[in-house]
Length: 200
Image (cartoon, rainbow, N blue to C red; front, side):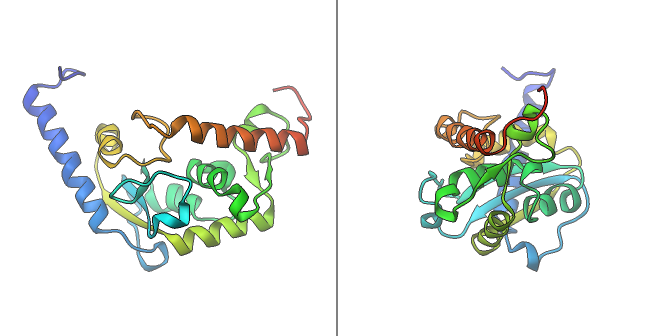
């Protein structure tokens, strides 16, 4: 049954629009350094060039690994995801880093001053590791961006269609438990190396 007060026709248009938007996201994919994403609201998708380069992660046929929305695509999201030192503010970087921790020899540490539990759940990596992660992302990932007036209205449907393994919410991710475990290990290592200084 359609929810949120939508008529069947309106709900059907939303589902159709999600299909169209996903197709456009996939078709528009390119390197971040070779594109000029609009500084506006919309959706973005992150694709991997070669699934073997992220062998521990189950990659769908679309090669999508992450899908997100934002009110300021370039400034708030894409720059954050692809900037060294920003793992503490990027779900994508934390999930990728957790998945590539051993391969890239990443050493988790808390962000900020290590005075709250959130500084650990939003971990980052040592400076050299942050640079290796960014280099890997620039070498192996592509981006598709599509402007949308109300991206939140179809975010869930886009994720369900794309099945990106690094999205932990808005779909029944069969790899979600494994990813949560990898992220939890990063939190444990950060706590072991840099004990919490204050009360959470």
